[in-house]
Image (tube, rainbow, N blue to C red):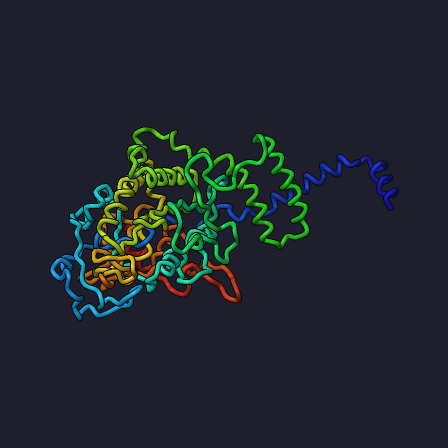
Length: 478
């Protein structure tokens, strides 16, 4: 049999070289035929936003000290909650067992709607005309893990894809040399990385953690001595993978890994360039506060987010706060006011700078900016209920809290919804996290009821079986 094969190759005039060339041609045809799972897709609905920047305040910022002032708290300070406000379960106690705690902040009205904004946010207040402040967000997760899952994954337990993963699954990416879904952390997260994971979606839709400096993405350092050698290595790997894949066309996991290898090579070249903030002008650096000690870290990440949006990255999440302790996040169980003055001082100038820079460059109209945390804080004193608080701290409050949105088709300069006189519960225009996710998707041109994936015998969607266009309708421009 082997003699016959040699005679065929000799007499046919093909030879091994011709067969190798044919193999390369087949590889190229197979590569062209494969669909890139991150290829940009036209949204099915009219879209006003192309990308999202989600500014996440880890720990739960106090709405009644930042965007939702309650004068009645000053009159009731130190007293038990009036019976008229009922009772709710908290993380380690109940509302009725705590005492009313007034806010120490001063508020002023800003923007066309006269939005009340705390004195800890002087720079953000200057952008009030761009903000749509929603004071009526709610869900039912009063622990950090459940609440973080609600805000990021639309479900209180583990296993669901994050909202960033859903966005990339629905729209792909307009950038072929950077991750489609980027997460910029300050440190550890109370619930772990599941909040930016892909859940039951294919792995290429998960968030990629990006840092500052020469190695912005972990484990991406080239193995070869030069770019050309790395390209040769990747070509050889791709050729081998294509041959293996040709007999396994239905293996989506294999296809995803092959695409990931190619994207990784492109990222090796692009990631250091996009993270080179020293190329920005002195005026831009000043705008974000990246030459100031207090604002350098968050400002650098906000500026990096703008550079990524310019390059077509679809979904970017920037976290403020970490699990290092010592007031490292917005979890104000102890001295909530002192904690928030510190945390707001780190982000105020960078957030305002991001909004101003996006607007000046014509990017705010196509970039949806979302600000918020996993819940708000109670109008009562924590009172050391969990062993780490004090009389000036506030407990978790998922029953009524504030988030704001800007850009991407949002009509700024407005305030939506209302909590009761002490800021405990929503009493007007309640919006669940499902409504927030639905609104984010509608701005991107995606219908949350039609963006589905089959899993374990049923079709799943980002908002489970809930969510309505109501918040989107209130937010969008006329």
